[in-house]
Length: 306
Image (cartoon, rainbow, N blue to C red):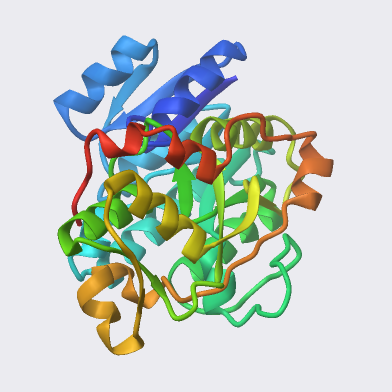
């Protein structure tokens, strides 16, 4: 299968490209810079120059492919305060790709997040693949992509946990939490730290995307989740031990100072099930869990700051 991958040179994309190539697929990676293009070429992929701000070019590339995996998102804009702009670009990209695949029966795999379940009010139980929300932002983008199932596209969405971890992760939530702890001289957790965050190893997530491309029925919402929910305090304790700093509870009024842009998310309780995804795709995580991966030490050799 000839597969267009947006975000192909990013964190998950850098694991997904070899995953697809090893499975016998051809990969065309979207690249907005010379550096990204060179990395894709070195990995054995073809290059399509463009970005999310050029939906016409995206549509052309999608039409020439046998399937699309959409990973790209303007995280830099999101974290610099332009959430509306990042979300609008994502939605425009989804509409352009979906329209190009209209009526083809080709697979279109998109990306969403499990944290939106907690934001949307799922509480008191693990979130499941059957949970469907209504709302703006990435919730609207997920629903827009799934809607292409009614237009002859084999559309599916992979919901990622907030912690996608491995030695390929240099700018995600895990290195950000580590950087914040190093700067503060203490690893913090909100309240009593009992709230739970799900997690998955990058290589396991990449395999979930490949299986979704190959097998997911139209309209599938999938959870690439290995650790259903790790208590936030347990995460902070590993970070504190690895950095050699104390671990402390952070009061709500201090969350903005201690957790920066993550302040709105750190107190969310987001246990998430992947039982349906495992049964549907035959997907089973095989790589280290979050706490084991943090204990391995690679995150603490170089720490990203927010």
